[in-house]
Image (tube, rainbow, N blue to C red):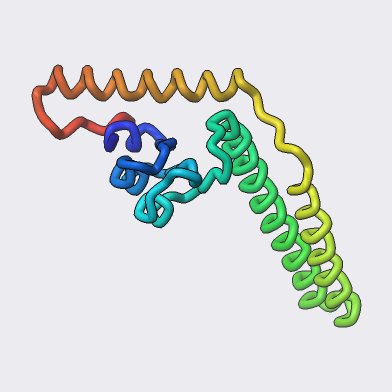
Length: 157
């Protein structure tokens, strides 16, 4: 499991009966909550309320969408604040207009966050390419480990 995590991230999907240690060790632990033990629920990052494993791709797509929206919102807020503050410090913008621009940036961030209500889109092609890249990385590490005969694998540059 540790060699998988070194190649990126690792998602562990389990039923929550006897896989709590693996869920805790994974980058993201997803558990089916209806039959899960209290320990598995406590260590899981995501709880699927219905025992339907087909909703895992939706969770991944929603996480990607949310991450993108957060990055966009932070960047939008910073740009508005820097722009308004810089013009205010240089004396080309009155204070009331600076405050208005700052609050306008906050309003834009709020409007951008409404996009989280949209259905996420995902590409099976991207997911498969990511999967194959992870498998390739694991195989490369195993080959290097066998070739060098040690537990320490040299880092790739």
